[in-house]
Length: 251
Image (cartoon, rainbow, N blue to C red; front, side, top):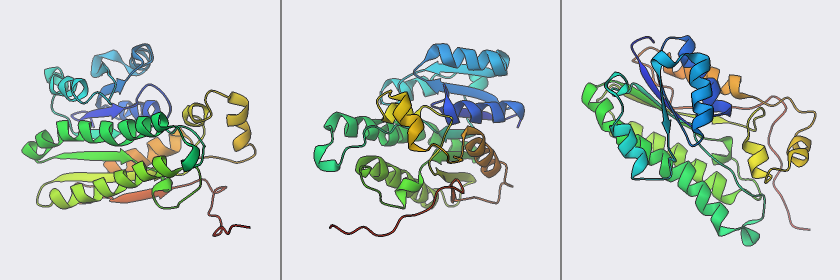
């Protein structure tokens, strides 16, 4: 992948950082997108600054984020792979008790930021007749669970958005894949969702072997590494310790 440029949103931690390491190991040029510049710079120092460009930006800013992508340095301007990884889950309240600001933050990050980055880079991919958009979705897009309405709804958007992109891109060599992980460990996701309560976040899945950043990163690299005539539309991965619950009934 030495001739490929990969943009990764949410690259400062968790899945995004590990995805960056995987692509760096294969020799790709990387554009690391995230809000925490110090973490981006630390990751760039770890994997090599000569083939890395850090883009400290909030993807929810629909003016600044596309503008920053449009102004990438020449060596990074022709993007081959966009990994829309940045995402957030907030709150575990029932819908009727939820905070609207939490809902809007999830929509702005998981939906608006994702489409803003895609819209900025997709025309160039089509023009060059090569490229791959990889969206990080969630199994929540398939399986309804309580206290999860807006997060799951946002991830359902991601799933359908990717499938519709595939329809629009028919006749080009641009591919689209949605990777849908189940509950994961080794990231900040649960800690953020639990408002920084580390004890509660750790207790939620104690004793379970959750999938982690390495598992998701391996999956992303695998779908991108398929031959050009092969597109993996959707891939769902879960821990063996995670499955599905029965239908619920009021009592």
